[in-house]
Image 1 (tube, rainbow, N blue to C red):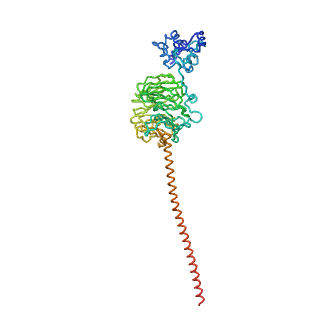
Image 2: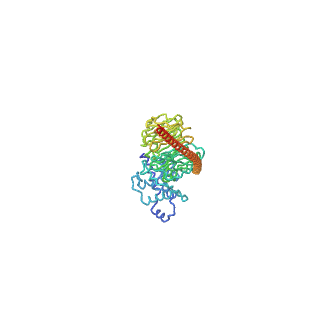
Image 3: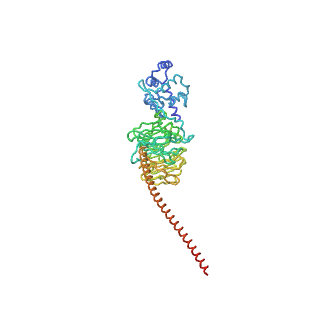
Length: 548
């Protein structure tokens, strides 16, 4: 690795020398600020003098040629060496200005200030090819990526959507297959992919929190950033276009987008410090982009089939990728150099997920197995038959458990050693995606028919159904209005029935009162008669006594 860095450093030194001009030339340029500093006029002649012997189209040490502008912008074995418009992000500037090791030129003093200023001016001016070239406008993210970087829990409350619109972009009578799910690492939040939209749900209560438009097409991959502040969506239109869009979770605004694929993006991820995004798909090429300006940093062309899955390790050091042919590799994320070739699956590798400590990788395959890999040695440490017909999705929970779904229509949870913990009721069709909530207490799974279930791990009971195809606000208002009208009619009917019942009760009360009054009168008459009888008997008894 040191030799490769040294070779590239020499190449960058040659670039620096090539860009250099004499003090008189620099003065002339200062006097004519409108004159463009270009590759053809100012750079290539010095390349020819100082660098072509090692870095030409035939030799290309460190895979870097400086013989043409196209070759220079393509970069070398470690990626691009110049980021137009961004000297601080250009490796050539970092080395020749002695901001990074190895300092260039090797074993020599730093270049004169005038030459360094010329290098910086050329880069900041857009690294133009000739006088007819236009400077590239740098794509600036709309959010501060540094504030939300890191794999640990962010300070304060975890990021949650705030006052997002719940207006559906597309609504159809029947939902499409669930193509992607993702759960926030720190908040009760899950993202569900739909047609030209992404739904955000609260996993504590199943409520819809907002809808994010995805006009690029259908999202085939969703990933939250390690801090949970960003949501990445990769997808597009099959056979036509593909890209990756990153959203700010709180505001729902698009932070930036990268990629311009000729086919749909099937796999993508953002690294731990939000500086890189990797993507892949049917093109069989893994491309790694800078989030600072959307520039292409690396292209990995090792895969022989469609790339189905990729994921950066939680610590950001490595990048794992997998394809439809069963190929699986681990790369150094900084240099894109191959780190491990993980051979073992007999069919397509459908999904990948890292354990939180970045030491173990799990893979799912259409061969029906889930495998665990120890990355440092590239060894398979566990393999088990998980789903008949094939595993379609797998995820490492933060507590070490593993959730998976498969063509057998089942959702399952396993312990860290592959022992079954919970099996959930089967879907009506094959299960496609799975995610685990931030606290590991619930599993979200979707199937080919568009059903999304939120279920408890503890008892396997379904908590809620999450609509992958929610109705529009107009439809909701109409349904709510109809429900309110029906409720009002029911209330009126109940009131009428109550009034009728009350009238009957009133009549019966009156009858009761009359009957009670009659009974009281009869009793009074009876009491009077009884009194008269007693009096008569007493009088008769008295007369009898007097006659004797």
